[in-house]
Image 1 (cartoon, rainbow, N blue to C red):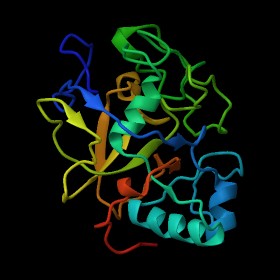
Image 2: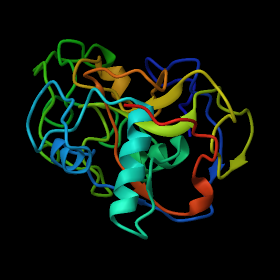
Image 3: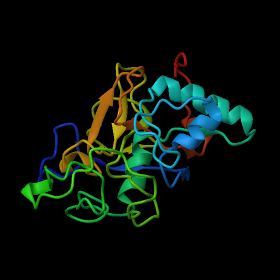
Amino acid sequence: MGSPENEHDRSDNELQHEVLLTRGFWLAETTCTQALWQAVRGKNPSHFKDDRRPVEQVSWNAMQSFIARLNRAIPGLEARLPTEAEWEYACRAGTATPFSFGEDITPEQVNYNGKYPYRRGKEGRYREETVEVASLPANPWGLYEMHGNVWEWCQDWYGNHPAGPVTDPTGPKTGKGRVLRGGSWIDYGHNARSASRFRFGPDDRFVILGFRLALGPEHWRDKQAGPTGR
């Protein structure tokens, strides 16, 4: 997890370290769609309206309310957000390159600001909006838009990566911001790297913020999640 020191455009919050995940988990093949959000919550907060596009402008706290309602509607589902470690493991899909697609990306693979390509590469298309889920190529494990489109909330509070090996990490116990991964439609190419990390406050909601659901062991759940939001 994290990036090697020679990775182009890496940030100092990407300290590379070994992670052991001892339990399996499921991760949704796409981010949560507006159709699913509206079916559960009844309102669609998104700016770029389309049932098949990712829901955006949702805060971390609002998602806790969404997930709680979804789990009540489908007993035994136990949906949750992925931990940051689970997210990066799934995004990399067995790769060690900056992207699951290799050393570089193009706008035909990833929805990002093509005017600012990775490693000063050739400029490409800048869509200036989200795209429908599963409309761009999947990574080697069949997961769509892990790079770009919308930043994806993770369960963890944001903090520095540890310096040594860790097992089943769930992040700091407290913090001011929650982790976001993957980059978005408005971001430069380097923000879409597998190791790229960002954070916002739990109540923040912007047109670049979305999420995808995970299923798995109850022990991952954040027992100190705090109050749910709008």
